[in-house]
Length: 269
Ligand SMILES: C[S@@+](CC[C@H](N)C(=O)[O-])C[C@H]1O[C@@H](n2cnc3c(N)ncnc32)[C@H](O)[C@@H]1O
Image 1 (spheres, rainbow, N blue to C red):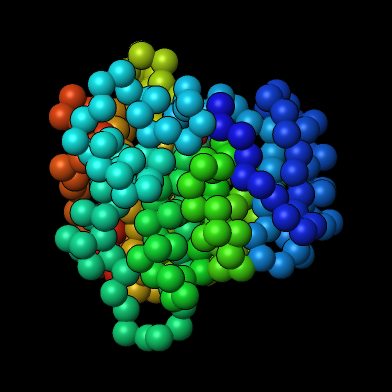
Image 2: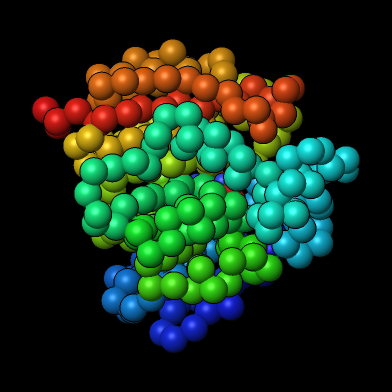
C-alpha cells in the first residue's frame, strides 16, 4: 500500500487497516471538529479498505502490471502514478469537459482518486483556475505531485465516499462544476460480485451529481458493462441535456469498463 502524503499544518491523520464502524464514527467527529476548518490541503482520513491499486514499489506505475504497455510507460515518463490519466484526458478533450464561460475557478470533485493521476492532471492542466476536492479509501501516491497536492486549492478526503463521514466532508466543498469518478472496487475475479460493487459506486456518484452538481455541470463515471448499466443510464439520462458512453483508448481492450459522460446538468426538479 502507498504511504500517505506528507501532511502539514493542522491536517488530521488517522491511519489503520480495519474499516470498523467505530473508527468511522470517531473520525467523523474529528473531521467535524477540526480538520475541515484547516486551510490549504485539508486531509480527513478514515480507516481504509484494501486499496484497488497496489503499488509494489512506492509510487511506481509499473508495479501494478507485470508487463508495462504504451500507456504505462507514457505515464511514467510524464510523471503520473497511473496510466488512467490518459482516459480522463481523452474524455476531457473529446467532450470539452472543462470549457466554461466564466473566469471563476472550476470546482471539481474527483471520486476514487488514488493513486492520484486524475487529480494531478487536473491540477496541472488548470493551474490556478481550479478548486479540486478528491476522495479515496487509499492515500494518494507520496511520490508524485507533492507541491500541487499541498496547494490551498486542493482538498483530499481519505475515506469511503459511500459513507456518511466522507459524504459530509465532500458536500462541504459543493457545489461542483464537474464531477469525475474513476472509482472501482478491489476486484475479486467474480464478475457478478465486481460488477455489483462497481454499480454501487457508480450510483453513489450519480447521487452526488443529483445533490451537488451545478446546473450546466458535467459528470464522468466509470461503469462496468453488463449488470445494471441500463438502469444506471435510465436514471442518469433525465439529469443531463446530453449523455454518452465512451471507452477511451487507454482502457485495456479486455476490460469491461466504459465511462458515462453526462453534459449540461438540467435544472433540479
Ligand atoms: C482505478 S483507481 C482510480 C485511479 C485514479 N483515477 C488515478 O488516476 O490515479 C480506483 C480507486 O477507487 C477507489 N475506491 C473504491 N471504492 C471506493 C470508495 N467506496 N470510496 C472511496 N474510494 C474508493 C479505490 O481505492 C481506488 O483507488
